[in-house]
Structures are given as C-alpha cells and as structure tokens.
Length: 271
Image (cartoon, rainbow, N blue to C red):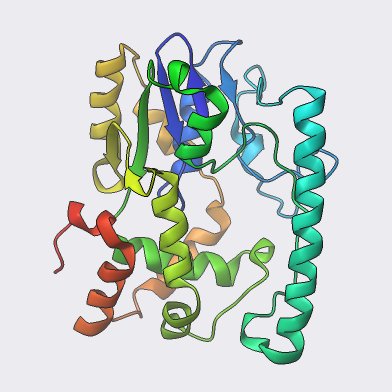
C-alpha cells in the first residue's frame, strides 16, 4: 500500500497482478513523508520475514525504504494483541483440519505481523484509518487482471512458493478448495461497503500503457521501462510458464472462474 501526499494518490495492491513490482517502482519515486509499507509480510518482531532467497524488499531502492507505516504505541500494541489472538485461533483451526479436514491442513501457519498500514491492505480499512475527510482528497488506484489468468497464477503460486503452506493436486482441486476464497479477498481490496470504490483501474494486460496514463493524470512521470528490470520471484517464472501451457480449461471451468471473480469479470470478455 502506498500513499503519496505530493501526488495525492493511494495505491492498493491486489494479488497476482504484478502489484509488488509496480509498488516497488512507484515507491522509489515517492517522498520521505509518504506512506510506503513493506512489500511483504513481516514476522512478529516487525522484521523482514526471509523465507525465500529472492526477497521482494531487496528490489527497493536502498535510499527509499518502507516508511511511515506504523501507528502510535497504543495503536501498534492493540494490533499486536489482536494478531496474536488471531494466530492462536488459526493454530486451533489448523489442528482441527489436520484431524478432520486434511485437505485444508496447512504445513505452515505463519505468525504474521502487520502495522497500522500494511501490505495488501483493503481499501475500506485504509479509509477507516485515514478518516473520510483525508481519504476523499486522494485518488485511489489498483491493478486488475483477467480472472482466468489470475486464478491460474494463484494456483501455481500456492504450489511453488514455500510460504503459502498449502498445495493442490491439480487446478481443479484449487478451484474447488480455494478459488472462491481467493477472489473474495481480491474484491475486498477494492471495495467499500461491499461495492467497488477504486477511482482508477490499471489492467495487467496493458500495464505500462495504463501506468503512463495514470501518471499523466496525477502529474507523475512514471518510468515504466524500469519494470523490465524488476524480476521479483523470477526464479519461479520459468517453471510457471512451462507448466501453464499444459492447463487447458473447459468452457464450464472458465465460466466458473468468471462467476467466482464476480464484478471483476465485468472488465473482460469470456472467450
């Protein structure tokens, strides 16, 4: 999540839309007093959780680190207690799953840490924490993607990256067990009172073009060619690209994906 006081925009990061790469690109152009959250989940000591060698935060300009995302001591203490309680609850649920619902059992239950502002923060929560009076002065922007490609990418991400803690036998298994939950979380990033509320949508399929257009709208010259040099999780892409070619979806599967994505599907045509 990014908030630029100078250019008056809030960037909301979704999942499997090159959001981290765009967030890194934009954060390198923001000012010292802007809100720039870490681009990945932190551990419970507020340190970068380095599970993978290719870590997202390493791609950020060292002179432009994450900043201004923490709240007051009271706010952070409340968040800490709430997250520890949720972690304990997830542990109990996961133990129940191990005994009675093994298909939902996670090999890893992470003790995560979020601050007042954090990575993948939903729009409604951003508005609540900023306050309506401040929020209305900013233009909100997020990235969307063809739901079919987004679902396939989410499937491979779950199976290839160790930090997900959950794998699926095949894409059909992912569709049955995870897809509705995944798209519900994606929609929540962009909704207020269960309705889409983003001012400006950037399409993954025309990422550079749309970023340039958005930059012109907020008077920010975005060097989109820098995206070619940002290869976050690049070690997984050759594997994903090779295996993706083997996924052939039926008409019913494609329709099921579009239905699961809800209003996100209205930006695309079902081929």
